[in-house]
Each structure stands twice: as structure tokens, then as C-alpha cells.
Amino acid sequence: MNAPVHPHALSTAELQALDSAHFLHPFTDHKGLAAKGARVITHADDIYVWDSEGKKILDAMSGLWCVNAGYGRKELADVAHAQMMKLPFYNSFFQTTNEPAVRLAARLAELAPAVDGRRFQHVFFSSSGSESNDTNVRMARRYWDLMGQPQRKVIISRHNAYHGSTMAGASLGGMSAMHAQGDLPIPNITHIQQPYYYELAEPGESQDAFGLRAARWLEDKILEIGPEKVAAFIAEPVQGAGGVIIPPATYWPEIQRIVDKYGILLISDEVICAFGRLGHWFAYEKFGYKPDLVTFAKAVTSGYIPLGGVLVGDRVAQVLIDKGGEFNHGYTYSGHPVACAVALANLDIMERENLPGRVRDDVGPYLAEVFEQFKSHPLVGDAETCGFVAGLVLVQDKATRKAFPEDWAVGMMCRAHCFGNGLVMRAVGDRMIIAPPLTMTRAQIDEMAVLIKKALDLTLQELQSQGKF
Ligand code: PMP
Image 1 (cartoon, rainbow, N blue to C red):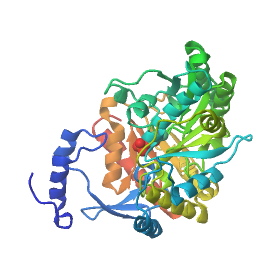
Image 2: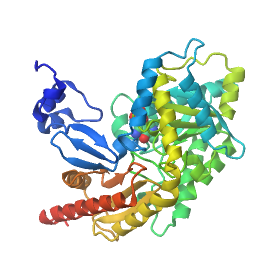
Image 3: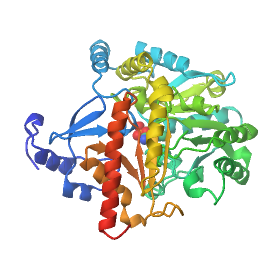
Image 4: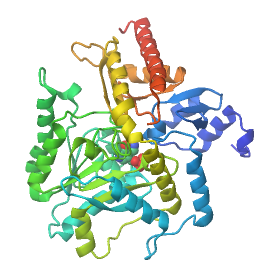
């Protein structure tokens, strides 16, 4: 297609045609998308986005788990503008630094709570969650090299985890569809089963008993490999992209006991869970465990500009700094001044409006009450929340927890009804999930609940009309 690109003059159809002619989207079947055309999102405010046909949509996914402070924050745009005029870019490779990056590193070190005296005083910056997890792999292995245990290379992760889409990120992740493309995982990365109570508990097994059993899969794996070969265990506090899988309360303390016993590093991937999402600045604080490395990205800037990084705990930082010499790793945009300035302003907003606190004490508990009511819907097998993430599982038989046949794509059916009624809710298989902006009010939670209920009812009707329910 040779049409000139005049952004203001293009119709929806023209944009869609150019889109399918030139733009390869992430995680997309392009033939399928070209046949129906991408939805063009034009602008956003508060918790809503609008498409090019003027349709208003309540964004219960915060973009992609990132717009924690909500859309339309002029002060973030103003800060980006001012920083671009002052210093739009400079690298931090060659013994140079810049004020926003320094201030942000110090600010994050201050925000990250110490657990049992274990502190985070250092930050390594990247531009995304994937790059941050690649950093973790290299840093964990470098740490063990410097500790004189270079044979400690294996990183243990979990099935159905999501840790990014680079070679290391996708390898750490536990998505078989991703492993199937590109010869993954890379060597020395292995997986254990996830702590998904609803699907994996034995009949009659309590949440607590299941949590302990699931954590002990880690110990089994460490013993199978040989503890002297294991570098680290990486996990999301609550699995996000895997479908909002919330572990039982016994899980994390037992994981901590096991990593301590064998001396292996613990990596908490908080790309989704940090910055108020679970009602705390960092999720390890909520669950009370003691990671050595913490991955962050997304909401550090509320998604307004790409930024990610790793909080590096004293255990690793001291070895890297004292014994390490040069760590041959880094990115052009590590410590990008504009991204760091926006992050600082975003953290100001979160602090001023007490967004983590309101999730913890006010709107989070209210969301939990609202979700509890969905349990009585005929399609809903279970409904759970943790802070401001939530999931509903759609099942064929509530009593036996029997799932729908995969090829009925019931989750996608429900998602289409959500979109149709002006709601973004994501489907992971038949788990329907949300992660709304942390600014959402109680009235907006009610508004969202009406839309979810409507989508569930329409899905039920569609299944009934097809004789499937
Ligand atoms: N880790 C987790 C837990 C994530 O949820 C994601 C993205 N959804 C990533 C890593 C990868 O982040 P990015 O897409 O910014 O590379």
C-alpha cells in the first residue's frame, strides 16, 4: 500500500489497512487480525479509553497492567517535556550519570522495605520487564562465579509463569507455546508446577496444605538437580499473565524456608505486582518473604514511558561491587533521564494520593466484596482477588470443577461480550482477569461490575443457544 501517511486524515478503515500492511503486532495471528482489522485506540482519560469510532471503553486492564495512576496525568507529560528540553538523553556507560537516574535509584532504595535487615540499596535500570529478567539471569550467574561456585547455573521457574519475551525472559517463563517457538528454554533453566489451587489441589485438600505441597515441588527439584548447581528461583508473587493465580498463604513462607536452606537466590518478579497493585509498594512486603533481586517495570512510570529495572539486594550488590570488577552488561537506555524523571513524578502522584494504601485498605477490600458476588453466577467456578488484581474462572460444572472443552473458547466468547459492552477484561483460557487503574473509585467498581455481570449473562445465553449449557 502506497498511500501517504497523514495521521489526522486517516479513517478507521485506512488505519486498519495500513496497520495490517506494515505493523507486526506482539503475540498476534496476523492473518486473523488482517481479516477483521485492529481496534484503533485514539485517546484516554482516567480509567477509560476511546476507539476511532468514538466508543468509550472502561479499561479494567490498565493498558497492560501498567497505568496504575490512570490516564490523562498532565504532570507526567510536563515533566517529560521539561526533561527532554534539558537533557533528552545521555548514556551512563562511560563513568557518567544524570540527576533523574540518581534520584530515582535513591528513591526506589528508600521505598523498598527491608525485611529482617535485608536491604535494597542498588538499582540496575533497563527499559522493560524482559530486559530486567535477562539482567537477573546474568547477574545471578555472575554472583555465583564471583562466589567461587561457577557450577551454580540453574534457574528454577514455574509452569505458566510469565517473565518476558526475550530469549531469557521467554525461557524463564513457563508458557509451552512460547517454548515451542525459537528453541527454548535456553540451557540451565527448568520449571516446576505452579501453585494453582483450583486446578491442582487434591479433592478435599485445604488451601494451606496445598500451598505447602506446591512449595515443596521446589525442594524436590533442587534435590533432583543437586543444590550445588542451583543459582536461583524466580517467581511472580501472584502470577499475572498466567491468569491471576494467587498462591495460598502457606506458599511463600515455605518457599523462603527452602531457598534459605539451600542458599539459593530468590528473585521476585514484580513487573505486575509492585507499585501498589497488591496494596503495597512491593509485593514481597505483603507476603513477607526476602528476595535478593526484584524485577520491576510497567507501573514505575504508570506505563507513560518505557522503564524497567532490578532492585539489587545487599547480598548480591556487595559481591558485585566489592569483588566484581566490570559487569559486562547494560543497555543504551539504562538510566534514561526522561524515563527516570517521569518515574519520579509518577511516584510523587502515587505517594500524594496514597494509591497503595487505598488499594490495601479501601478499594481493594471493596473489589473483593464485589467479586465474591460473582461466585453465585452459573458459569463462575471461582472468583478471587488480591489487592487490585482479580480473576474469575468459567467452568462447565461448578460442583466437579469441570472445565469447558478448550476448542469452545468460552473465555474468548466472554471477552468479546465485554468489548461489545465497553469493557476491557482479559481472557487467559477460561480465566477472566482484571487489573484496573489504582485510582478507580467505588462507584467505578460498581460500574465495572455491572459490565462484567452483563458479559457473563450474555456468554451464558450464547452457550445455551448453542445447546452447550
Ligand atoms: N515479568 C512479568 C511478571 C510480566 O508480567 C511481564 C509483562 N507482562 C514481563 C516480565 C515482561 O515485561 P515486558 O513486556 O516489559 O518486557
